[in-house]
Image (cartoon, rainbow, N blue to C red; front, side):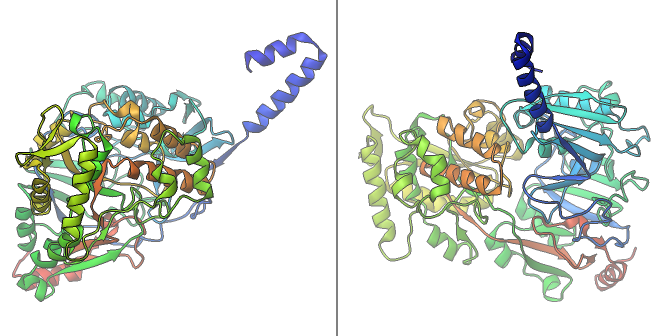
Length: 616
């Protein structure tokens, strides 16, 4: 009861009636619903007690060893902190309160929690833990573990978690198996959903180990796999927990079928690909067009020993781009950033490097209904009109486009345009070097971790040289790259900003002012714009799907016209290569590869071994 209501109650009978009415309204707002799942916008696809997701085979056989690959190295088994490089596959060890479906945009279902209670006013959420839930040592997972996980990850975890869970005010025990999370701030429909994704770790285990330190001591888990063995920086092996408490839950049935999963580390992706073709590991997802077109050629592919498949998906592809660090003085002016986009020749790269496989990206939410296009419609203007004078005026009158080099002479004309924009921004060529009024020459470094991008960036560097810009590439190892990214020690990088079908709190980490100077945040660009902040909050508070789409498109436009990046490309297929020893479900998930829904087919496996002269 608020202080205001108390005062009303103390004044008169009329005030009492008013207070009663207010209390009645408050009670109505506090009405809640208990369910086996939750959805941000819309109904749940799967009913209470469902046996399995549609995209799995509930009768898939268990067994066998699968080998996967990772690049670089690792020095930590704690993926929840900023320090260190964590090993691949650690997510296999942990359960969350609920698990997401890969054929719905924004739904989650009972996992550690057997049910979820959400009030109409979305001010809190309560989870009832499944009494069967157990850690790998057989001890029960408790409310205290959940509260400890929340409080620890929010106060000591990676900056991403601290800001992702910022609006969760507290967690408290509400019963023997009930934990209640209370929210702060304005309406945020995503909070119950993101709370359900909280990774849960053992309070007892961390009472004996320092959460904030990197470690190679295998932590206590509760998920379908545990660490079996590791060779620090070179490999890590997981074994399926045969008495895993949640193996028959609807969210798990038909998944996690391999007995052993081993990740081997390779120095770079070229070495890794050669290892795949020699059957040093079993499954490979390829992201490079040239490699996909030419790199897999071998006798094993021709004879069908391993297969290549392109699998259509409905996943938002987000934005892959050359991203500028606007904390650097030379990139503070959006005109400069815009000018550099004219030096990227996508059409040449797509034809000569990518075998025509890619589509040019023109949105931060590409391959989804969230992407803006044309001029803003009435629904978007509701969010954009109040920001007039604070955002680029072009948003209201011009369609966002990217430079195109589709005919002879286009590149020359685009570089002329870039030169004019740079001149307007105070830069001119003197003695062959782009120079500003203070006599500073334009120098920049593009930081890379993947050598495959050298062939893509070098032509752009050549074009920038024609503008008088001295640009160079620097390729570093994984650890150095991560350290430099965490401290924003770069001029420009090739970055990917992945998006979901239901944007929400993660947009703060990508673009918000409060994260611009937080080490390790995903606001690598350093965006510090009140208009962007306001639109992020509108997205978070969107009351329904239509409003979410409109607010997201509005944000997309503001980001695009900020010229923070040079958009690159995207594709709408997963490129998968795998040795022919697997069975797959008949139905594919819409929004993921779904590799852990596969299983080893004994007949295929035996045939493959025989053809390759291997014995078991």
